[in-house]
Length: 248
Image 1 (tube, rainbow, N blue to C red):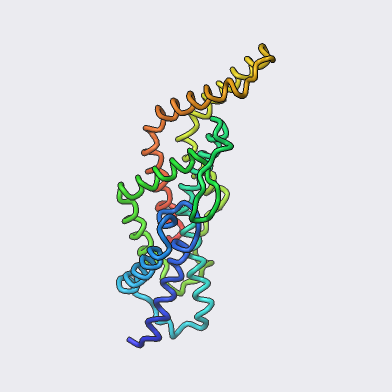
Image 2: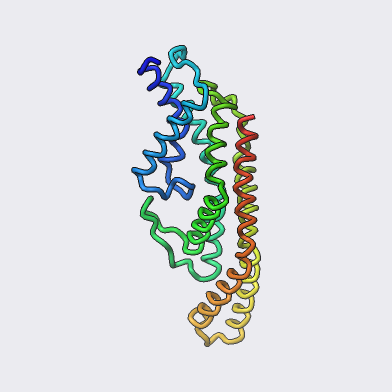
């Protein structure tokens, strides 16, 4: 095979995979060191070139447009793949404020931002479940399937693009199931604290009740978090279900 032709085909395949490795966030590849991301990107691109029949790039009219097209496809797939972790982190931040950890946080060195304490813990737990349950292999199979169902060079507009608002609503609704029992019970505790503050206004309610809120919140979270694995698995399965609907 002509070397320049192979490099052009490799670049098109890598362009679709690029969003999974260069973007920031909470995805399965985002917490890897940069050098590891580059190695995995190159290795996976070579494997995809070998397993998937890539059309002859020389027949394409504009190689640069094809690169942008493949990058757009990869960005859409990556966005859907990020939604489970976004939902888990979002509701973790809500629970942080509800329990009293709103002022606390964890500094993420990958994007130099402050992340919610409980949200980060649950995102890391979701990542552990993602790898332990073999979802990373399903992710790779899904990426390879995207090249078979939507070959290189096919226009981005031919994708069955879902309604982004409804897509995010589905993931946020499912992710809420992990936290909603604790949030509702903490809301009842807030009502009780408000009642106490009205009956005893001389009490410094913030410093008295904050340790109680933290203790009760962590206790309730330890009880209801045992059901989180099923919710995480449901979120991951939704990703591949939407991928299938996008590429079909």
